[in-house]
Image (cartoon, rainbow, N blue to C red; front, top):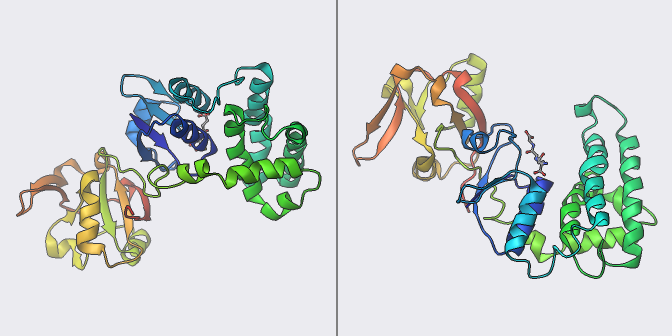
Length: 313
Ligand SMILES: N[C@@H](CCC(=O)N[C@@H](CS)C(=O)NCC(=O)O)C(=O)O
């Protein structure tokens, strides 16, 4: 079972909460949303996270559906109880529709071409006051126990608070809602789904791509000059004759061997289709292992992403 996910994404968080509750631990593929791996696009053309591949041909690319699917297998605390009730469905719809709409525009007014972030915050707060009314009478949205609905909404409220925690905490009359969020933020369930390996800080590396570790100053220089001609640490393309690349499964060992003492090494993600085919060769090194070698400068337009490399803890 495979889960494409993104650590901070509220949809992915709610999916991971349900998977964990059901005792399911798929293999995690943490993706970069600015540079989505071809495997994710092949699994779901929608190209959003989370996406679950069940292993027996089922692909689920909607977080709520994924929650229901996971809890249908095991639901020890009855999160599904009343989850299909009309008022439960209305709450989820309100969250995924208007609340999310205002949340995005409050968090990123520039992205939405407006300067009315404060207005959107007020509109989101109007919705939160409705949720607050429910929570005045009961600790969770549907009653005395937590349900799928709480877990579906709370990751979005977490984002709302996170955008301006002081203003949120100072908001008068929202104490029941603030306590509801605080219980979630302090919960072991959330801590667990934000932890390695549930929410890897290390991006999943695709076997469809090639990789190269670069020193930040040399990568900066390449961007300015429009050409990258370093082979490996301390060696140029001219000296070595080719640029050392790695397959996804080789990056960690290459990092460990040559860059383990260097803080801030940059991982270049390279699309092999954009390399001159005649310059790319897969060649054995003396240990017998085969590595990709590029016999020419690295074209900058073949570099899909350049991020600080994080090794697995
Ligand atoms: N309706 C989808 C929405 C998922 C979604 O929009 N996820 C965001 C990340 S929080 C995403 O993948 N966006 C795609 C992108 O940024 O390109 C679900 O519930 O799973």
